[in-house]
Length: 179
Image (tube, rainbow, N blue to C red):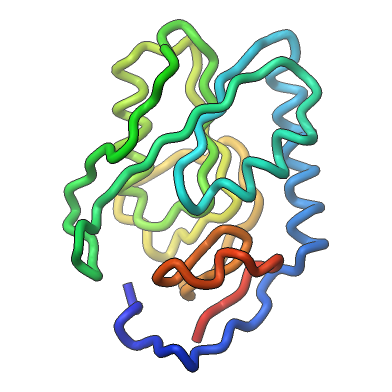
């Protein structure tokens, strides 16, 4: 994943400003409001990276909704993905017969999000859609349909606005490239 070559001296450079992020979140909220009018969806936030995106997004949604959190892991103690995904923290709410919207920070290889979407589909929701702040198609290994997309990003290591490197840089207000 490139983490090993980064050092504590690595400096983030802005890719998308907080204003650009705000505009994208507003656009996504408008699309979601139109599609979920008259429904009461459950929004599932993938921890940890998506929490800032979800918080900003739901403040713009003026209809009844529920929020759930799920934590998935494919790394264990290693620096590179094992390719085996496991649910570290599961859902507490029933999704059967519900409209479900998964909120993800970034879709990269597609392995983790594909695992989650298949996991949720087996629970028989009424509908299942994906909202991603960013898509990095250059790294895709499994095809993924993103129903609501903020940005398409280059094959660079991104931090800020919830995205991290070794738990650092999540608090940056912009999305940055870490070189």
